[in-house]
Amino acid sequence: MADENTNGAGGAANAEQPQAQFNVQKIYVKDVSFEAPNTPASFNEQAQPQLALNLNQKVNKVADDQFEVVLTLTLDCKVEDKSIYLVELQQAGLFVLKGFDARNLDMMLGSYCPNMLFPYGRQMISDLIQAGGFPPFLLQPINFDQLYADQLRRRAEAQAQGDQAQQPPAGNA
Image (cartoon, rainbow, N blue to C red; front, side):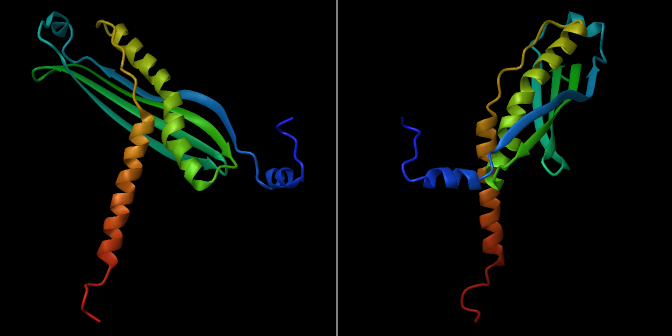
């Protein structure tokens, strides 16, 4: 009963706005590299390894409503200055996004799609490390929503600084 329209205005408004559609067409590994330059000596290292994770993402528009999102994960493991292993992975996905306004499209591509790709990348990195003869390693979850919010904040700050730089100095009329 709650979804009945008494005056028909709600139905007309819904008919005018296109329904947003999201489809995953394909998830794939675009590029992968595993290096363990100091094996077999590195298998005997007893010191605590230092891990550095670098994360990046890129969006490529393939067609009108089709986007490729590439999540790049680089994991560097060292003991002192010796490289134990280096994993570089580009986990990608092909997504169709129709009917999204600019703000929501940006959010989907900047947060939702990387969130979908990360578990695949995390598994691939874990498998590569283990196949390289090292103990299993599982990347901790990443909060892509927070990373996206931080990116929006940085964009707003940069835009505000850019707007201030274009302002003429006061008193020079």
